[in-house]
Length: 310
Image 1 (cartoon, helix red, strand yellow):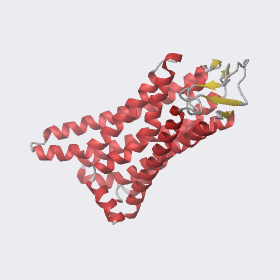
Image 2 (cartoon, helix red, strand yellow; image 1 turned 30 degrees about the vertical axis):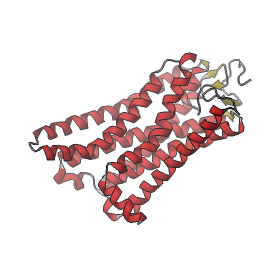
Image 3 (cartoon, helix red, strand yellow; image 1 turned 180 degrees about the vertical axis):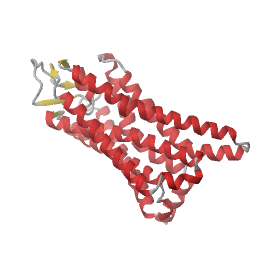
Image 4 (cartoon, helix red, strand yellow; image 1 turned 120 degrees about the horizontal axis):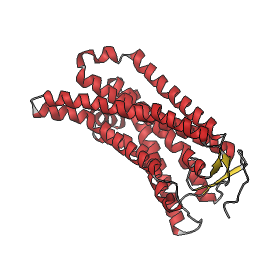
């Protein structure tokens, strides 16, 4: 039995994660373990390859590829925070994790999520400057500014995750079983029976600052980019400019589409499995797809990768 009731406690000794309602030993369990192992392995190897290519090729030492390199670092963090522990649960059958470990996992997961949202905004701004202000590109996004932006991205992620994690400590829990494959803030709130007022205040405030604002800034950047594209008379010119943004647009659509869908699902036993599937997509599949999308659609990355390998 995985769960038992708790009476008004804010600090359970252990949390039990119940991923996908899978029982150890059956075929689905074995296939799930293999799937997550290869997802993790492919994601790590591809992202490390992107980082290595960008770091070793001087021609890629530009703001655009610096931000892409940081996106790969974030994607590695995403999968490393979740999948190794999930594999341990699936292989050992022990789904118990201490409350402290649960909070640590949630902290780094929130940090990665916040950093990814911010880096996607910065990458949209990079494309906006490159297309709308090409003559001033290296002045606006000089080395110092780029380093400062990267520092702000990671510090913002730390602040966001710290505030939300502290607010979770005020929650009163009535159960210790979460229907999720990692310690998610939403999953913890679903097993609460009080003390969530501060969490919701903090969550919605953080959502406006670290969630909605980057999305709106992304949209504003692309509205201005589209206006510039419409002024270009040459079809080849329009196609060339749009191709520089297409990879980022695809990554942004997949990430926000799956992430928002997972958090918009109402808390109900009927939707637990669907929520976990959507969460798997944006926390494990998307980090693997990001470098593939950029590398497959970017001639310079492919050229540098071939030079490195051959």
